[in-house]
Image 1: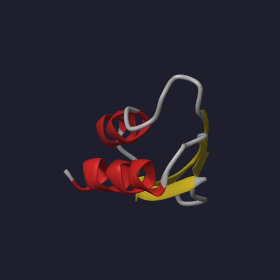
Image 2: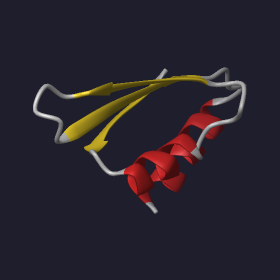
Image 3: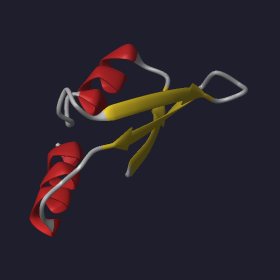
Length: 60
């Protein structure tokens, strides 16, 4: 499971969702003020290297 909290911005949201495969379950929840979005993704990975790779891609 991966979790990201980002500013409520469609472009940033699309970039985070693009980190995951189409099979991943992606859930979004907007904060009560509407300023932030919490993105939770459930994706099966086969190694710890895949997990690290996702977080490295996210930093860019």
